[in-house]
Image (cartoon, rainbow, N blue to C red):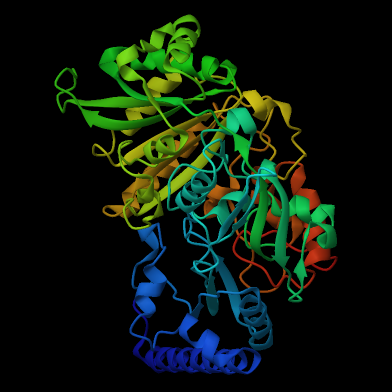
Length: 533
């Protein structure tokens, strides 16, 4: 629609007002920060668009390039604190100047919630809060929220080779975000989620107080371990249990295509993988590739990788799969025996022969533009259903969409659905997520995601249809950008992430942060008699 010429002066005035208002808010925030902090210690940790390094600071850990467009809202200020007092001062000044705060650990939010907002905002970037302090005598560690998976695994291994931690796969993902949403990796069938191993935390609340498990109470401690990041406070660090790992583990990654009977193999995987010994995890990733043996004119095929960690020797995993999953066709040449730290290198998509130091490099892994979705399955998808799924995959160019399958069972079946906010325990076969690359043809790729989402409806969990909060999806609904959001409105997405645990999260939030300082598009809302009438 073309606006009348008479309307243009209003737009110019509105734009001028917004720029002026933003500049005032920025200046007020910076003045507050200078007064409340040691200006010499914090000045080098503050970035504004006036700094030549602002864009570098912003892009440092944006891991979904869909949110690097010129039209994407940018923060007025980025602060990279080094101490708890820096964080306390940022919270104080945000409240005083009514500036919304976003908290960034590793920057892997599927929807950019840690560095994008529709209202004036700043980013609290935790990259400098990044220590790992392991205590081998108690098999515990304090892990800061700015630590990445790679840093976590590397520093634990430097302290001891007999312990690990059940965090995520990719080395540059931030631990703060992972644990806040539950967090899973290749050890979940043996030891559960990352959040299952948290035994204490240091949280800075909206009042600026530093709380521990003892002083925050068990309800808030429950909520921060799986209730999603950015709702309850700034978790500075987590005390976690380290878990035993053997000196030698076995790994493999093999591929099967449609022409190699992949559909029937994967169909069997759905039932077998959750029943394997706890020490064995086999996750799958599907992608369209090309093959000379494909009968299709375009030579496309769907290729599924079967990627595995076994906490034991190669001969044992070969014996297990020969008995329980012979259809996979695993042979001894497929399996490699390595140390646990080498396995973590391998599962971060690096060559297993690469040195452990590669886990410290945050720049090596790809940063795509994408739109993703997640679901949970309680029963196997039929062969017919799988064939329809492959047909959807063929609609996009090769390598432009991914299917990821994460089996449950084992320890996941033994933990109550209410032990943490993460409710997906016994009764779930596997978690599924898929995403499409959106660096080109974005509108059509987004529509493809919507259509595939609809196609999957009869096969996935229902009432409510489940989703994983760390794979956040704003299509399910959003909070109001300002003011309060009703319980009913927030339930549209809250129940899908947390099931029956959502009600308790709302209650905890309403007590811990009654004025809703910590908020974003899908943060836990505060219960309000006015908005919920």
